[in-house]
Structure formats: C-alpha cells, structure tokens
Image (cartoon, rainbow over all chains, first blue to last red; front, side):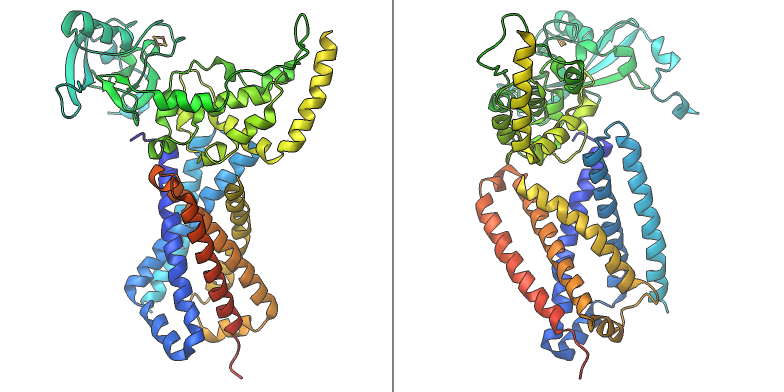
Length: 114
Length: 269
Length: 108
Ligand code: FES
C-alpha cells in the first residue's frame, strides 16, 4: 500500500461517500413514510431516536463535514491548479472537519441526555 | 530524544556507519510460492547509492539477485524501485540518507505490478497505456525548412514535461492503477499533456478524445502520489487538471490551435 | 467526462443546499420538531428548494457510487449495467422523494 496524505484523503473520501449514500437511502425511507400515515412515520422516527442512532448521528456529521471540505479542497485544486501545498491543505481540511464535528457533535450528545 | 528535530536530516551516527543492512524482497517464480525478505550487510561510504549496494550484493554476496539498471545516473529510467515505501530511482538515491536508525533500508519492486523476479516487474500495462495516447508529435504537412518558432511562454506552459524518463515510478504509485489497469495512468497523461500543449501538434482534438475520455484524466482522483513519487520532480496532477479543463472546451481549443499554426508556419518562413 | 462534470456541478450545488439544510433543520433548538417542519414545508418555495436539493443529492450519490464501482476493473466491464441500474434507481428515488416532499402539508 502506497501511503501518503493523498491516499488517506482519497480513502476517507470514498468511505464517507459510500456511507453517505447508504444514509441517504435510509433517510429517504424514514422521511418517506409520511405518505403512509402518521402511525408508520412515528414508529420509524422513534426507531432512529435511540442512543445508538444519536452516536451514529455524530459519525454522520463527521462524514458530511469531512466529505464536504475535502470536496472544497478538490475544487480549489481544480480551479486554481495549486499542487504544491497539497499536504498543508489536507491537514487544514482535516482540522476544520474535526473542529466542526466537535462543535456540532457536543450539542447532539448533550441533547441526548436531556 | 528530540528525534523529531532531526527529521529529514541524516543523524550523525548513521553517517558514521561503515555498513548498511539492505533488505531486499526476493521472489523466484520457479521456486518460491510467496515473495520473502532477505537481508544483506553491505559496506558503504557517504557517497554510496542504493544501486551500488544492490550491485555489491549481486557481485559479492548473491549472484542470483535480479534487478534492472543501465545508465546509473538517473536518465534511462530502468531502476525505479520502492525504497522504504516510496518509489524512486535507486541509482539516484543516497544510501546513508535512506537508512533508518538501525541502519536498515528496505527495497521492494514497484508496487501494484506483477513481479517477474526479485526486483523486476512486468511493465506491459504501462507501455500498453502509453501507446494509447499516441506519444509522438504530429506536425503540420507544410513543415518549415528550418524550424518552428515557438514562443517562450508556450515552452514554459509545457512545464518541463518532456524531461520524463518513463521510469514508471508514478504509474505504480497511483491508487487508481492499483484498482484497475484500464486507467491510462499519470505517465501517459503527462505525455498527452506535453503533445496537446505543443503548438506544433495538429491533432489536439483527437488526443483530448482519448485522454479526456472514459479511461483518461477524469478517472484521476487527485491523490498526488504521482508527484510524490516522480524522481524528476514533474507534476502529472497539474497536467491532468489542465487536460480536464481543455477537454471541456475541446472545440474552441482546436480552433485556437489551427489559428496558432497559421502564424507558426508563417513566422518560420 | 460527463459523469465527472455531473459529479462536480452537483457537488457545488450541494455545498449550497446542504448548508441551508443543516442550518434550517438542525439549528436551535437542535431537535427535529414535526410541527416546525410542517410550518416550513407549507411554503412552496421550500418545497422547490427541497426538490432541487433532492435532485442534486441523488445525482451526486449515484454518479459517486458509479465511479467507485467502475474504478475496479471487474466492475468496469459491466459499466453499462451499472449505469442502467443507477438511472433506474435514480428515477425511482426522485419520484419517491418528490412525492414525499409534496405530501408534507399541514393537516387541514
Ligand atoms: S540506472 Fe538509469 S535511471 Fe537508474
């Protein structure tokens, strides 16, 4: 395996991407149940309100934020052609994603214990 | 302590060593089931290269060690190997600088390619993909007697891509190549970039069809391994990004090229 | 090339829509309240934004999955099948999602 910051970012991008696709269809399945009346909707929504899913929600946030900022990085590279600062850009993306995950994840977890 | 301060520099104690331990990945398809690592102790001076060490092993210790090399000064591109996990030309790489704290250097064949024997890999797919991009120049019919006058800006835009020596270091470091050999690969895309950007070339549209097609530039995922691996400090990623942009405005680019060629041949007459 | 461009433009659209989505749906008081959603979804403009968002997200997700799979040589041989499956899945999901968005209306 040829390890480099580029490989790590690529691997995480794919991993979060696939995870988000799976999430997307689950999300549609839950929200889509409004068509089948409030009973089904409530039962499905309750299913995803358990502590396990709250934790999964933090992971989801991390995935979204990382994927988004990695995408911004790629857009910057594509439109400006910067390739020299590839390492620092990768670390910057990683730091921003971590920061935002903490900033958004703590309220989610606090809300869980309310 | 404070080891991290000397990161990237060779610690004094390594420089003072008289010998190095060279770990080489061995594989003989006739006898071995799996590749294995063999260690040799090799004398060294501050000037020894990794290739010198391999050559010492072959002549003095084990004549069956197989590897490719020719020019010994980083121009033929035969000796690309994986040294301590990163691809490089071993004739170009200083041995003391490649050692870790215990004086060990690990040499493996180029990754993701089928191994023929020891450090020799099968580069068939490398050349097959290279052929796909038509790596030669197609000049206009009415080539001038003496020379084409190309402007300095146009030469600068090619970004020294012509100094590629086809060693395969970028190709075998590419993660996309690792997943499927039908991707054209950074080496051939860099060459395609060189020909597309060349104002003397008459078929940029056809080239962009191939290098901007399904197996071309759009399959690059901007992993940058090729830049990290290139022993000539070339920049295939930037070339690929340029190809992507040009492929999106292919028609306009072809017209610009036709215009430019009129002036190019006139100026030379 | 076309797939790459679809991916890229939908990514740019998503940056925009996802920011809105995150702020509107999750910003204080941090929990999903059915009435709040209904109130917002009453506005046809929100319905339009959500449908566009759904479209962008589906394009991005399906082209992304397609690229993940076709990068592997084995799947690249059946890429037509994959593309067909992605289109069918996309159309169905678009239909289902649009119906869902349109069905959100305050109980009368
Ligand atoms: S031997 Fe020629 S490039 Fe190393």
